[in-house]
Image (tube, rainbow, N blue to C red; front, side, top):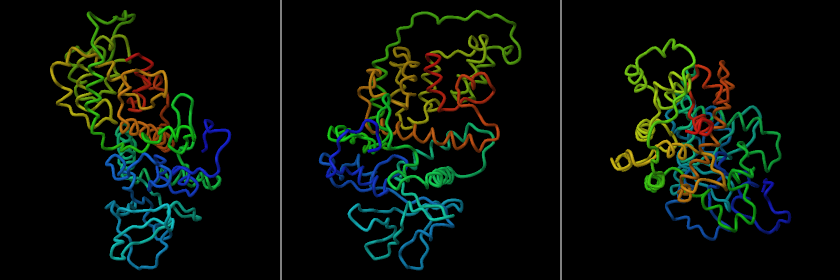
Amino acid sequence: MGSFLSSRIDDADWKSDARYAMESGTFCVICGGPFDVEGDVYNIDPKEMRYRWLFEFRLLGSPSHVLTHKVTSEEAEPMNASESNDVFLSEEAWFSMTGSGYFRVGDAAFGGDTWFDALRDVSDTDTLLPLHEACMDISCRVIEHCHAKRMHTEPISALAVLNCLLQERFRSNAHASFEMRNDLLDLCTASEKYGPRSVMALTKLEWWGGEYEKFYTDPLNVSTITSFALSVLKASPNRKFGHDYTPPITREPHGIELLPTELLDQVCSYLPATSVIKMHRVSKTLALKVSLDNSFWRNSLLDGSLLPHVWDLDREQLGTPFYETSSDWKSVAQLLAKRRLPISVRDRRLDGLPNGLWNRCRIWSIMEEAVELYLSRSDPRSPTNSAVDVCKSLEPVEAWQLEEMLEEFEY
């Protein structure tokens, strides 16, 4: 299975959907999930809404190279659903593990479908990437958020950036073994702290224990996300009575530190939450003037500026006056900021974490890691990967650094 957690003795006759997908190379290179749930998944009903996203996928590629991967002879060019010249996005596609092995796009009912050989390595040609629509949506959100924090970025669509990133990974992985060649994001690996990176890294024991279910649950449409956030609020009482520790001032203020608190409050009202956190950490003087009190964390969570991966919270339900002072919003922010979730020794408030939100956090963290690496190589400023160093510099705080900062500074 590609994992150091795998069983020592493996049954050659046992094949999970994930293993079929890995061996044939036909899996979503973002999440590691299949496009057709068949075979030995006994506890999954593909008709359930939470699994339907696995069947909703398209082909992503470079417009000038699409026809190279077409295996049918019709003359009509496939429609580009991206409405952009810098990237190709097919119409809805379908695939069967027991079929031809090709991806079909178009109207099959009337014989108007086009067949493509996706994830094929052709010299000097970009490949076609089959991706779940939900994975593309989450990936584009990651890219847009990372782009928004950078001053020197080219005017290119998030979908085009995603294509460039994955094509680059595909080319660099061309010399790997056939089984691992399409594993562009190390999806076949696992760690002791965070567990399997994707369903393809599950051991047989984990598979038969039903661990695949959370990997297969819809990461985009999480209907219980607000009720989960409410349960976290209820389990996070505000026990602070009095003022936080005030650090002693050891030098005279200068620059922006000389501004009155009222004016700094106005400045902060126009800044994203991550930049306000960074300003608070610049000096002891600003730590006093730029207060990160309970109201700050509450407002930042409710306006959506703090945690980009939980965009679909019901702000009205969370914004009821009862929770305004009764809950420790800083603690809630610290918990919800975690996108890399340990498999053991974790906060008990995460016990009710919806499978869909867990899966979203997994996909977000995988893509955030890849996007930051990709953008850092193309950025002439070569930004640091250390949140501590960022706090000491004038660079804006990136969303991916917020979790690290919250942990280091106990926010």
